[in-house]
Length: 124
Image (cartoon, rainbow, N blue to C red; front, side):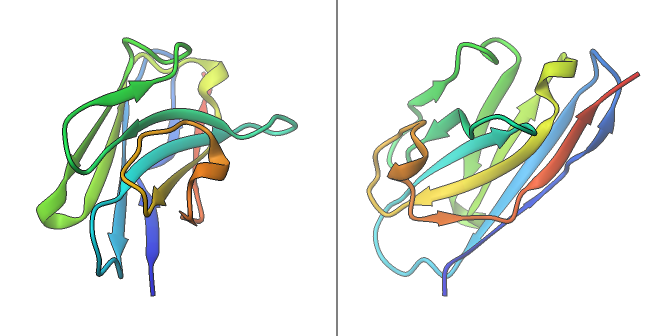
């Protein structure tokens, strides 16, 4: 059974940093791409960043470019989202998602499995 579990969320002041982790388990075949998404209250789910398993190419949304960095440790089946210079507008529930097709996408329907999410709150 495929499972994704996020961790690392919390409360941080503006300008602060957090590192989110996503642990994947249950994948038995082939490669998969991992994406990070976020959803603020009253807003649609937004793609933040994604990364293929097969190479280091990434996609980063313009809204977080230069502040957020995605990385992965394939040996440990973990994906990370380093978030620096956090702002109020970054407040949201952050989700990791996995696609059985190793194609990087920030469109939620392209993903097959989702974690439960972790809350990130940026507030002074």
